[in-house]
Length: 371
Image (cartoon, rainbow, N blue to C red; front, top):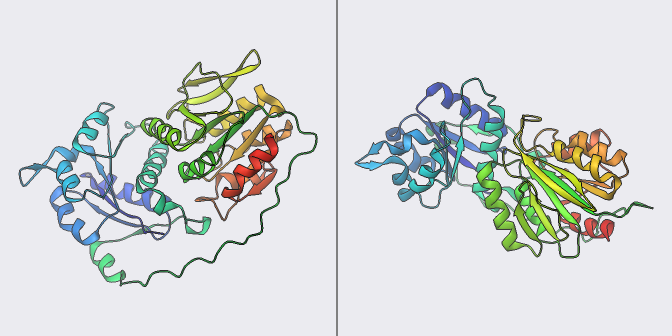
């Protein structure tokens, strides 16, 4: 795994310290977090730290450094390093993109909960970092990213030999159980959080028609849900789109819940229709997997199957249990292949998961159960 080296820049020392603590608590172990309060301090530290990603208060992006705006200067000097920005204004997104940021997140106002912001920020960092950073993470890799200063980082990072190649996977395929006397499956519901974008990509790109419609909640900010849907649509043989209220769930189509909106289903004759609307966070997140699974259980009964993937927390566990209690086949991603074995573990521990499978075995399981 290529180490995550996150450089955080915020002019508020108090918030900077909190941000570093929250990132370090959530990032994969082995991650390094350095920080600065001013552009000049950042420009001194960045060449030494060599970040793989930068996260910064967008308000600093327009400050001048050597007669150049700070954010465009960073983009020019570090073209291969994604820059995730945040700010207090909804309107900051367009300006951030113009100046060269890869992402922009709205920071909650005073008095609003911060937990969803930190979760979305970490998700944005992992998405921006790309496949090479998350593909080989296991549950043992997660938690307790290191907080380092420039001096500690320089002293503690001697040249390391490349890691030995991983042993070839065993040719033995995991046992996939097909429920006996199962009802006809006409809907597939999935939920994921941290590491979920890559897990979902690994599943959806392996699926081919004919299949029932697929509805997905991935914990992801609004702009990213649209970009993620568009990316998957170009890679998949199924039609993938960001869901909107009024969408009729069609076979061979995948619908991803828009960021900041809960997604539920209702009946329209013999088909399902989607509703996507803002609502209070559930388990500190919106969209929530539990909201979707609970709706699927109520409307589809045992004609749906549920799949819960990698992620922090317990969102989706209760909803998946409700689905299983009504007769739906359910699958949980196993610990070894999860980026974070949190959501699948919570579901497994309460009996919501009928069978645990490695990520790469889930497409085959979908075929066996649905067909």
